[in-house]
Length: 119
Length: 171
Image 1: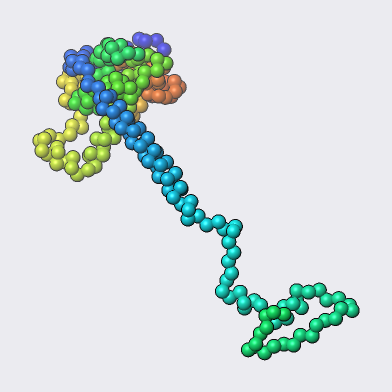
Image 2: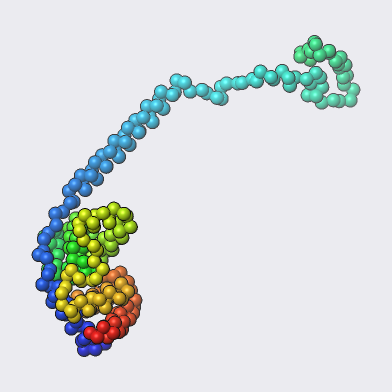
């Protein structure tokens, strides 16, 4: 687009710019705040390292202290106090396979007061 | 770019940067000066890095635009908070709503600013960058972070609307 088409607007903005140029504040360099921010980062990094070291030490040391009290589950057995309730009369018959010509022992049912668990 | 070079570049573009800061801050001089200082700080302490993909001027203007947007957001929050009313009462002044009221006194400039104030922000910014700062439309697009096509649309519509408003003012 030719420049003269917008000449009216350019002149208006040029007048505005001339006015603004008269009130421009002098150039002043701001004080840079970089150093304190760097120090802050260093402290944060140091704190993170400290936490990591202490954490590692705690985990490893507490692991050692637990060794004497560790329970080897594979070497232990456990019996429930109510296991005897599962021992029913005639359990030998249930556990054996019946066959022809094999004498089957006659089982006399004991009274509940005298259960013989040695069958 | 070394610090001394950055300082030299900032000083070289200071006058243009002040005009752009005024535009971004609704022609509030105090706010514009604060935004300019904050922008210079960002450039010098590395929060805003000059990548040398664009010109330093384009880079600096983009930093000023973002900083002004942050300042406007902070101001909006303060206006919502009841504390800001007390502060203004204590200072004995009310916020100005007239663009350029505290900056410019000439009638033609006041009319232009009043007309620009009617335009949407993007159109106003593109026109300022092209006519006031003598940037190309592509340069304006870089500063505003928009595509060239979008900037061109804002430019054309903005010019048309600005002429309408100025015509209705009799300017």
